[in-house]
Image (cartoon, rainbow, N blue to C red; front, side):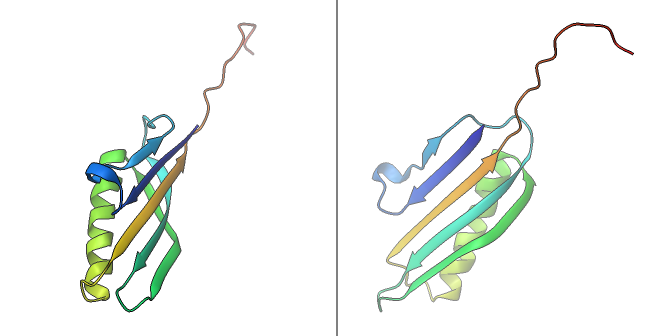
Length: 100
């Protein structure tokens, strides 16, 4: 099952859009972010991976990463968005039978 968190500064009520089922165990998350500045430049990165983090941990990590990005570009972001995605494993259903 895939779980996705999408956040943008233009979202109503500053709430992220979430789809999928929340993973029960820590998962590997892939991250993409986009930042626009007043001078028209766009900063994009989609190469980061967060290893084995829970939903709560990944939210804290994203807050710190966004703060670092803002500091790097001089606190002049006009638009910020990010997408986090994890792919949980499926349950294996075993049929009863003889074990060897």
